[in-house]
Image 1 (cartoon, one colour):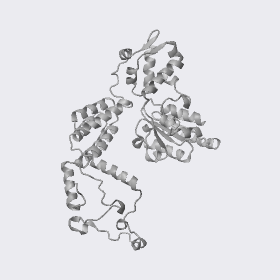
Image 2 (cartoon, rainbow, N blue to C red; image 1 turned 180 degrees about the horizontal axis):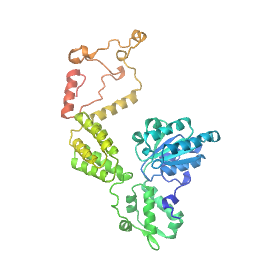
Image 3 (tube, rainbow, N blue to C red; image 1 turned 135 degrees about the vertical axis):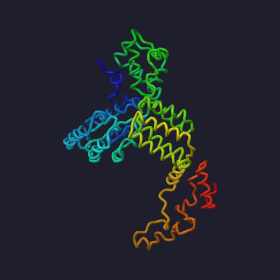
Image 4 (cartoon, rainbow, N blue to C red; image 1 turned 30 degrees about the horizontal axis):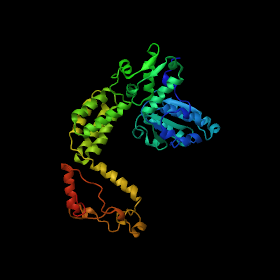
Length: 424
């Protein structure tokens, strides 16, 4: 009786699923797998309200598999093992249609809890579907991640959200009784931020709190919904927008804006490890060798705030943010690895020059491994000009130092050592 509108409208089959066409459309990455019932273990990554749980349920129903569900917030290793034991007992019954174990907010599982899933996933006793709002590269252990396909779910688009409201007006008996007229949608869509669940919650609140027929207008929405209730939703669209503003403020050397956005995240209850992790990445990507101490500072900050936690860690974070914002900037190292990876993809697995190969056996030595290698420490200034790249790409320049005191010194060092090779 008190079931919310979002739950009442939850699709039960793939044809009713409105969004994520890049996954479940005609050419979607999951479409063929779902139709054939050949479902691999999956991690569904995306912000709240984009249909992760719904998609997991539909996959189970469409593929005709038993479905177990756990929430990482309230479940532990014991619960995982109980489900695995059930799956093992039924192993002979289900054969290719092994049960699906859905774990919501899998990023909240500890390492030991995630470890408890490995054997069952590897042996095929269960097909794991994990849902997460956090980057699985950081929050899911590598051994489990390597056994899963990661699919990214996107926030609902404007047209999809409007279609969702219209579906509610057409098929939900409670909404239909109210004779709703949808005149304007801009305020409604802005408040939900691409979160379908939030949209339906707001829409239901507006409809059920009004007497008689209801006309949805922007003014009506603004009047009845307090827009500033949530300054920062650490699991919603604002999460990504504020993090983006935070990083760009530091990159742009504005400590005032950087500390402001830091405060917004702190007040919103953001995980200190998430903030510190972003600072670590920035210290290398945007500062790099312009100030190598930035990475040391960021790493020490990560260690410190992880140990201390809030509220004291706000001081440490502020110190690091201001240091990074006021530091010299360079993305030369970031650009160098991107250039190098592009070159590797273009040229493939080029052979290591014989002079650079290791020669631990007599056979390898006889084959010329290590011949003519010039040991740098045998030469003046511990340097001699030699070629360390494969023949096909020799003399390629991948690293271009930035224009700052430290990297200018690096440029001069390279020009003196390599003479004609490094012409910056």
